[in-house]
Image 1 (tube, rainbow, N blue to C red):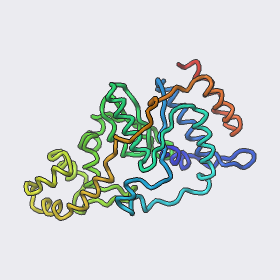
Image 2: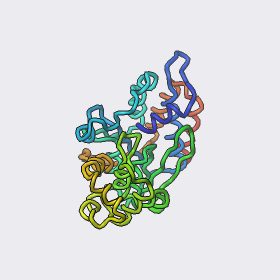
Image 3: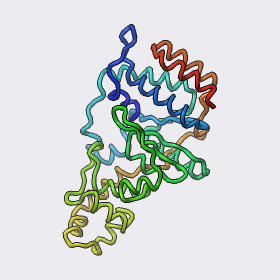
Image 4: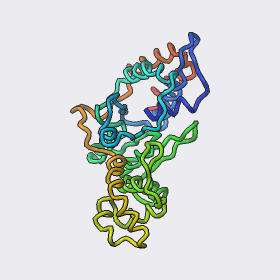
Amino acid sequence: MSLFFRAQHALPPMNTSTGEPTRALYGFSALLLKLLREEKPLGLALALDAPQPTFRHQREASYKGTRDAPPSELRQQWPRLEQLIECLGVPAFRVPGYEADDILATLGRRLREKNQPALVVSGDRDLLQTALAPVQVMFVGRRGQPGVRYDERAVEERFGVGPERLASYAALVGDTSDNIPGIRGIGPRAAAKLVQKYATVAAMLERAEEIEPPRLRDVIIGNREQLLANIELTRLRDDVPLPASELYGVVDARARDRLSGLFEELEFRSLVPRLAALASNR
């Protein structure tokens, strides 16, 4: 869903000859074809947000509370997105109570346990928590900016902590996009140093009396409840109860035929030859 939203804002308005809005669909489809062409994956899976509140909303009512409602133009394209997913014919996981990010983290863990290389593609930085070998993350930037590939080393170079400690780092600095408040008086550098030393929020609070200087110690102790609340929001769940089915599927010839028909209907004429080229690109 983050990719669908980003596509809406990365392109100028687009409509079919009958006036149906299509720019999010076009941008998402173009990115999907690019990934299939360049990565040549063994398979593909999608993760979507369910309409029900998640455990994070139940934990904190203000979670993501500052986000605007999706624009009408984007909402009009949702049925077509479902149609696009159906044409792909690959697993599309949606689990009530969890976010798509949690589903991707669970898929990443399951593939990692099989020692299966995988690429998580998202526009949400929370997914960098999944960049544990052999899983990597492709972070898709805003407004057409090129994607950035992250492995464990790249995450540590960017934030000063590895993927497995990123949730604790985020609990300290906060996340404005999710309306998670940071701990006042702790910036990114101090947060990285604390997480480097104590690894987790739980260990940090357990050993809080050791923290130096005293000012920083007082900040941590004084914000204990906020930190405990934050970590519940920032930490991705990798134990989502997914159906006992294949973790990914193949975009085969029948799927390409279905997609070609949909692209013709949506007047995505530039995408039809790109789709056809996939057959000779494998």
